[in-house]
Image (cartoon, rainbow, N blue to C red):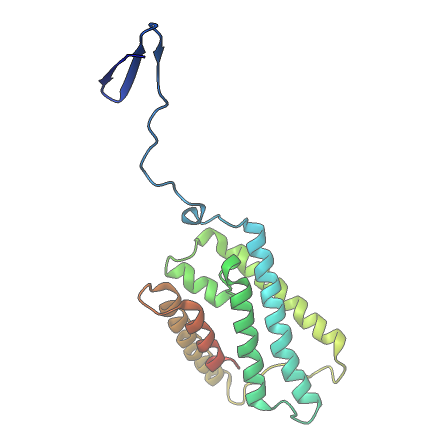
Length: 205
């Protein structure tokens, strides 16, 4: 069957011998589609908050439980053992929840990422609230599971003046956030999960 075709701009008209005119479907656009990950909402926000609650809960529960066991059982865990518990807990949580929420588990990390413009500022309050909820639930769970004096604190206590403690905490926190921000936000850095995990393993306390 003979056909006459003509092209006018972007519209193509095909005329067959029966006088019928057909319009082929418009050409598909060659522009790449925008992925959901580019929009920053590939995972529902409520799932991110749940991941932060669970991750912070398990991190505080495991790390502080090691401290409590060490205090209540004549230093059986030891300081290197406590550091390993913190580091391994962070490694497991980063690999299991990092693809959902980014595995912050710390308000300082969330604020640092927002300061570097690598995290939406409007999501910071919700993230911090989720982290506080997770850590509070973990502390409450430890209080229910372990018996002992009411003044036992599952952590480290300042040994100097308040000013010395403030200065040390400021320097250590600045160092921690500086390394995490550089490793996790710079594309030239090596695999962010490996570096972040190694950093936490060395800095956990």
